[in-house]
Length: 139
Image (cartoon, rainbow, N blue to C red; front, side, top):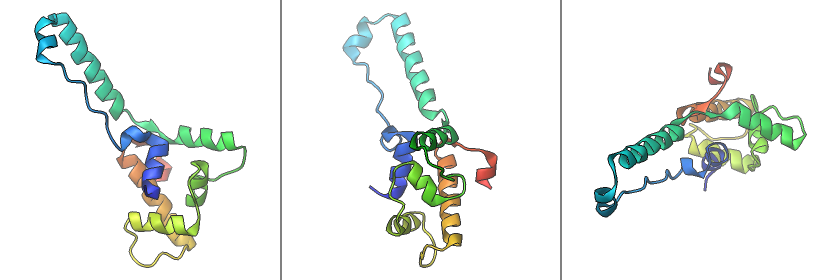
């Protein structure tokens, strides 16, 4: 599993990587079920689908993770602190792997500019995958 997958799993849960398949009503059950029961099942399926698409409050999750650690982490600006907040390896090798996963052009050497790029790309990816983030993190 890559660093990007680890970030998604920590914030969106493992279900984000493999969505659950909906229950199938067999013809035998369907034939004996009342219209009300079928309508209720359809309503529950629609609610479950809507809940799966509900935005994930990334800011709240990360703030809670930082608070639980009891140390100061600047996850809003630092890719290293973001990874530390999520208990993900923040070493140079891990960030290089993340750069490769995010299709960084050029050779990743861990410069401040490259780490800023990584952070922005991760924020963008989170937003594209249903993450709710403050607007200032998406610029």
